[in-house]
Amino acid sequence: MKPFNPLQPTPNTDAPPMPLPDFLPQASANDTLEEPARKIPVVAEADVAVLGGGPAGVMAAVAAARNGARVLLVERQAYFGGMATAANVNIWHQLWSLDLSTQVIGGLPEEILLRLYKMNAVRNRREDRKGPFTICSESAKLAFDDMVVGSGVKVMLHAWLAAAVRDEQGRVTAAIVESKSGRGAVRARVFVDCTGDADLCARAGGATRVGDPKGRCQPPTLCFRLGGLDLDKAAAAGVNDKVIQGKLFADTMDYNGGKYPTTLWCARSVWRSDELMLAGTRVPGVNCAETADFTRAEIEARYQMRWVMEKLRAFPGYENFYLVDVGAQIGVRETRRILGDYQVTERELLEGVRFHDTIAQGVYPVDIHNPDGDGIVFRHLDGREVEVAGNGTVRKCRWDGQPDGATPRDTTCWCLPYRSLLPQGLSNVLVAGRCASATHEAAGALRVMINAMSFGQAAGTAAVLAARDHGGRVRDVAVPVLRERLMCDGVPLLPVNEAVAAD
Image 1 (spheres, rainbow, N blue to C red):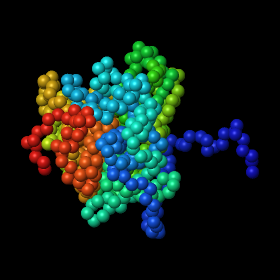
Image 2: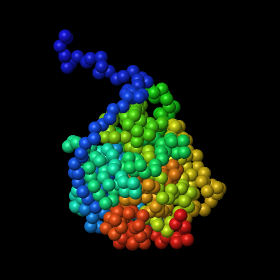
Image 3: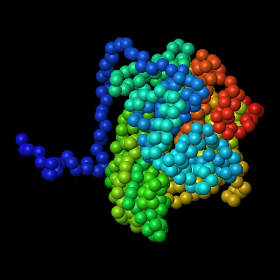
Image 4: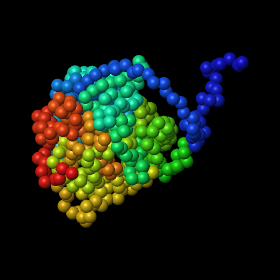
């Protein structure tokens, strides 16, 4: 056998031929095996168990713990923060109405921003600190740690939800998790599903749906950071993300022979003037709640990123960049959502309907990335609709049928009802984050992290009330009591419209 020479490259060190070969395993069509029955140790018991430690899960756990519950938080990564930390998504959107006259988000989301300010690890695009914000994803790991540990939450990291045990009345009696120690059971009075993909609800038999009416999901994006940029030179040459996007779209990607499918955007570093985070990839046609699709999305996105970087060197100011880091996972926009007691619609959000059971508010627009390819559409609360095509061209109109130039709508914010956190078929489970009950279009406004944190605080607070006063029954929580508790904890809820029917 020829001895290995580390200085002599072997053929398999070359990049694979383009387009990419099929790298996914093929499942056996009919072959199955039966797992033997076994006793599973109960590894933790709590009043409230939160599955998933992203922005929603952290806020749910912290809210529950600060309201007196024994809380367990289970997270699959080595750290908390989800898309903000693992996926490098460093933009958190604003806390105030579009006209900046009314605060609509506060409480725990505002607290973590203040913690980041103390670390000098957040930058506001305005001096008034009303948002949107650029954060340091690495510092956010520390801020999330401080909130979780400092609130007395018990923690399991590197642990995945594997299954759920429920009784005939729709009560989840245990969540089964897999970790380095093997399989274990977690018992709780109330469970909060913050997995993003409604994993607990799906495994417990709750009603869910995927994507749009055809099952198509908004495509995921891998974010990465580049350093060594001369952004002053780029600006002087008229180079910006829209110019780059248009030129990339005019070419053909080598990894799959297709058109560049994304709407590229960038965010400057909190710390360095020569560094950008680029949301510069997009993988259409996948549902990242499925292993094969999730795997394909991760691999394809990295090859797409490499193609983008190769093209970037031709732009002034980008000649000498280097790769700082790549998100530990692709940023997922949409997979499963629960079918809850109420499914909020796009029109209800855009028209600012104030539900009698509103527990969270926001102003982020309906934001729909084309599930099949290039293009993105924004529908704003003030009536504007903006569509950005793959070649960078922009079309503007009104979604409300008014002519261009008409007076902007004066909607303060959209509202989310408590019922959208209640999965049908399950009696002691709440959800928070992007898997709340909404239509595909409405989910485009709800899914961003600043909103997920608000939903988390509401769900965690409701979980305590259910566990303490109602035997875990989340539907028995009195909404006025929940709203009052949230407002006492700094959530600036607007007055509700009692005329909006409960059904």
